[in-house]
Amino acid sequence: MANKFTYHYRIFGCQMNVADAHDLSARLDQYGGQPVDTPAEADLVLVNTCMVRAKAEDKALSYFGELKHLKGTGGGKMLVALGCVVRRSRERILKAHPHLDLLLDYSDPDGVLESLCEHFAPLKGIVPTGEFTPLYDAGDCRQHFVTAIRGCHHGCSYCVVPLARGPQRDVPLERIVGEAKALEQAGAPDLTVLGQNILSYGTTSGDREPRFVEMMETLLKETKFPWVTFLTSLPTDLTDEICEKVISNPRVTPLLHLPLQAGSDRVLASMKRGHTMEHYRRIISKAREQRPDLYLTTDLLVGFPTETEEDFQETLKAAEEIGFDDAFMFAYSERPGTLAARKFADKLPRTEKLRRLNELIRLQREWGAKRNARYVGQELDVIIERCENGDITARTAFNKPVLQNQRMQP
Ligand code: SF4
Image (cartoon, rainbow, N blue to C red; front, side):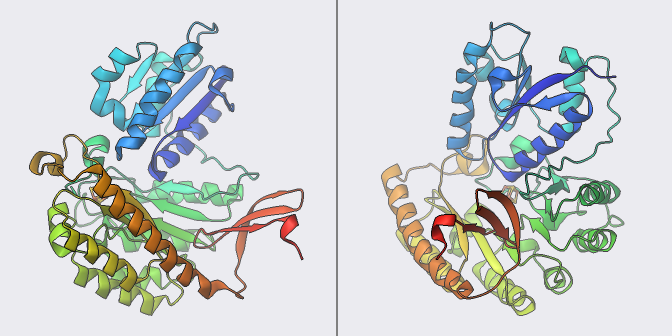
């Protein structure tokens, strides 16, 4: 029987990190762990780092500093840094934050648990079986994730993910289905299947492996979730077959997150995205044909080193023409070790990048509001996430928050 212990998890970065944290928490709970709200209360403090953008990396590094005062407060507290930033900056972290006890340059739950079983006293002697029941908290109805792919091999020139998380590794289909079924049995109302480029599922392990379409068809057949979402998709891998066999399925949510990044073919080629505007337009039109209720979101990156004012105007034009329901918008920040950092000088002044970003944000807000207007007067199904003192927080199938506040009632 495992010893009891408390743990606190701080997550920086993307949904992959959130999914990893959920999976590791489920394993820790299985071996006697009890989550707590603050690092001060915890025997084990885990910090999952992200370096996709400089801001997330800086935040994680500064958080390590905040943990310093916890050392020496007694009780043998263990501080662990995980993930991308550790992989890239181990020496720097060790030098600046010697109070950290363990630095793991990965965040995949099985690997982290194995290391903790070696180094963290309450888990010592445990031999993890690899089996676990995904975490489901009936009081917390946020999206429920199953990870299908770890890492990425695509190599977009600005992106640090392939360096930080390694090449693509597919989770075996039986395991994906097993985790989905466990979530379903525990009462989770919906499912989100995750991968850095989920559409490339099965493409690294030989011709006989199931591909994305088969994986989704199997998941839909083996479970009864009314809402299944897949994230994230690289436009170049979105095919007619996926539109016809997956996006058209009414149990697949209308949410499609398809990062465009830029509206200029020249910049897209420098980014090594693998798609052109023509492909993007054509495949979106196909997806909308299959799913008239498609809720299209995207990522847009301004200030890439080779981006001229004309290129930026093409991004604005593309965003207006395609009509995104929502967009995550960023200014380029150079990530060490990437192809873009080696090949191009990041000469565009930060003030100019921010000017472009602010203009894009302002316009996308206007365009997004116009698209959102199509929901006025419509009745939509929602999942209720919280209900407190008559105030209700819910979300739609396409993950849009819906609020009903007592004070808003007529
Ligand atoms: Fe990065 Fe491109 Fe892979 Fe996405 S598809 S994780 S942007 S390399």
